[in-house]
Image 1 (cartoon, helix red, strand yellow):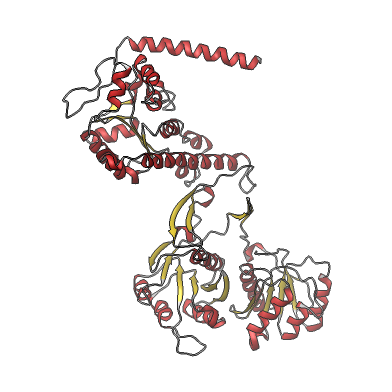
Image 2 (cartoon, helix red, strand yellow):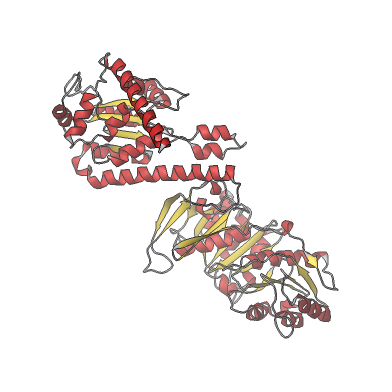
Length: 588
């Protein structure tokens, strides 16, 4: 109670001080003027009654517009049009200078508040002269009477966007904490929220792309619907929510440390594309880009540029992400082909063209209609091969793909690839960075985890068998280990000479995945390597022994089973090298 009483006393003191300040400024009888071309004089001249204020606010005169933006794209054109319609422009700081430099009349906000900017610009618009004019309901006589009593004029349009906080705190070199704090906008969100709350009387615009629609609504009563105002208000609150979420994310990372699960998390997402449907035609769908700080410069499908082809579908995004995430894990020139999010063909070679050919041959039936991903530039020679390549199964059928995705294309390569078909989707994407977070929805909630970003350089490949792998075999083990990380569990991959030979995925038991991968590898399994995403629970007459009997030269798995010694003994019996990594790679 003592604390509450103190706060109340402080509030009274502040109120009395504000009253004193108002009386001082009121003596100047300052009233901002709004000029109208039609009338040829100021609409507001001196003190006005509540009735007159309501009449003016609902008359054909447009009123007053407050413009205070960080993104100044289009504000000169907007201000020009607003002035031509009869609006008075109120503005702050850099926005006011931009408009004035264009030769347009501007009322500075301190001339509205009769109070200067203070605290290095921290306080500019936080004043009843601004917020009273925004929040007053025109249909409530008491509100308008209050404005009149305090010589406050209504503000009918608020155009505000916020300090570039995201760009500031993610800049390189990393700015100081104090710089980040100074880029937390206070006055902007306050004005946006006030205008959005009173959207029936005040337009609120936070996105330059809405300027044209705003002008249309001001010129045409048919466009000036409550739904339009509500959408602007929704967008305004969303703008503030996204902004606040980034500030909260930054403060968490600065105070607790990156990588720690958030105690509360809001993820700002922006609609990128409305999709024709979801996984199936009866499901509606859309694609959203993650605007959080954790995704800055992370690359990947969300920021890809589509150079050609049909619009992306829900399943296209899933498959393209799976393919590109996989191929970006490889250092050597690599091609990955994915079908239903599982890699069915992978090859790494010094020559990207050869890598493509080998990736297709790994499973040409599955590759047909798949997604082809590369981790380096696609040139004209490779593009021609993609365009003309015939299926190895019959030597006649031209291979069909849904998507080709790569970090870049030569000009000639892109032109050749566009000629393959009108529908082929060609994506150019910045390589996906090997870090970040993973969010996945479950019924009524979300699962958060660090992304599985381990690469071979992070791992100690420890040989626990009597037979040791050669340098070439060890390279194949690392290749197969990267591949198995991107296969649905239970996952098994078989590879040789940095080429995927067989893959078993999504089986409820590991031995079945081994059998499927061995079947796909066929006769090429002799001397190949096998990777498992998790340890082998059983070895004898099970996964390990079946692989050894088939002729594999080496096996890599995480280890950690109570029966690890069985796996070692089995490999020793058949003269197979066994390597453990200590890291599991389940993928559900």
